[in-house]
Length: 418
Image (tube, rainbow, N blue to C red; front, side, top):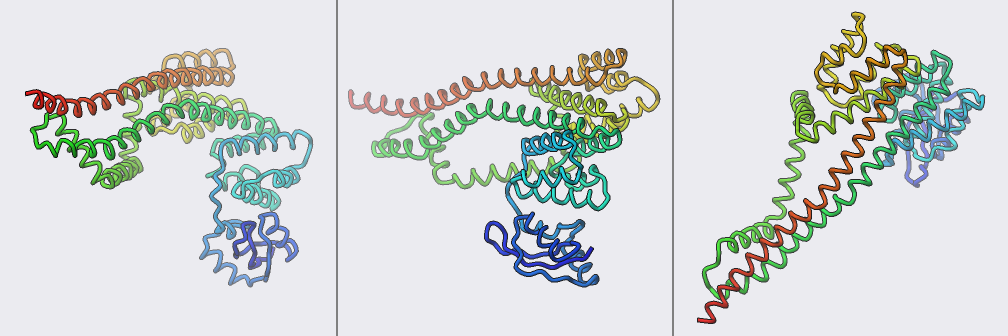
C-alpha cells in the first residue's frame, strides 16, 4: 500500500494537508472524500520521506495525519449508543462486517466519530480484529466496549453483544440526562441568587451609602460591614474571579496527582449523605458492567480486570486487586467483596445468592437496577431540599441588607425628631 501526500479543502472551507495510505491515487481520493475532504493535489511519496513525516506527525495508523484538522464536536454517550444499535441491527440482518462498517459511515454525522469508524473499517479490512480496531480509539470507546466486542468475536455472537452494549450506553445516556435535567432548576436558582446579590452589592448599596456619607453620622456596625463588603466587591471583583479560577486550578492539579486523587476518593466515600450516594452509584456501575460482561461470555477474572478500570474510584480500584486474588484462590466472589469492607451488605448477599443459584449475571444486573433507582430517588430528594435552602440563604442576605439600610435611616429619623 502506497503513501500519498495530499492537499485538500475541508467541508468547512478551510485548507487541509497531510498524508494518507491507499492502493492507488483514486483510492486515496475516495478515502479523502469519505472524510469530507475534497482533494486538490495528491502525490505519492517515497518510503523514506513517508517514514520521516509519519514520525514527525506522530501518526500511528492509516489516515491519522488528517486528524490535525481538529473538530470540536464532542462524541457523546448517546452518539455511541446509536452507532452501536445500528451496527448490531446491520450484523443481525446478515451483512458482512466490513460492509456493515461502510454502511455506518453513511449514517454518522459527527466528523470525529466518522474518522474513528473509517479507521476501524480500514483496520478490519487489513486483517485486524474488530476489538483491536476499536481499542485504538479509547477516547470514544471504553475498555468495557472493546473487551465485550472481543468476547463477542470469540463466541461468534457479536450482534448480541453489540445489542447489550447499546443497552448499556443508552442506559448511561438516559441516567445522565435525567440527572442533568433534575439539577438544572436548582443550578439556575443558585446562579440567579448570586446575580441578584452581586447586583445589590455593586449597584444598589453604593448609591444608598452616599446618603449616609452626606449626613456624617455614626453608622451601626452592621451597616459598616455591608459598606465594606460592597466596596470590596465593587472594586476587586476581578480578584474574586481570579481567586475562584486559581482554587479550581489548584484543586484539579491536586486531584490529578496520585496521592491527591486517593485522598479525594476516600473523602467522597466518607462524607455524610453524599458518600452513601456516591457508593451506590459505584455499585450500580460495578454490578451492571460485571453482569453484562459475564452474560457476554467473559470469564470472571477477565471481567474483573475490565471492571477495575470503569468504577471511577481509586479506593475501589485498589480493593479489586484483593478481590481478584481471592477469586483466583478459588473463593466465591461474595467472600472477597465482603473482606474489602467497602461494598454494602445488599450487594454481597445478592452476589452470594446469584452464585448459589448459578444466575449471577442476571442477579448483578438486577442489583444495578436497584441501585440506579436508589440514586435517582436520592438525587430527587437532595434537589427538593436544595431549593428551599437557596431561598433561605437569599432571604437571609436580603434581610441583612435591609437591616443595614434601615438602622441608619431610623437613627437619622430620631435625630430629626429631637
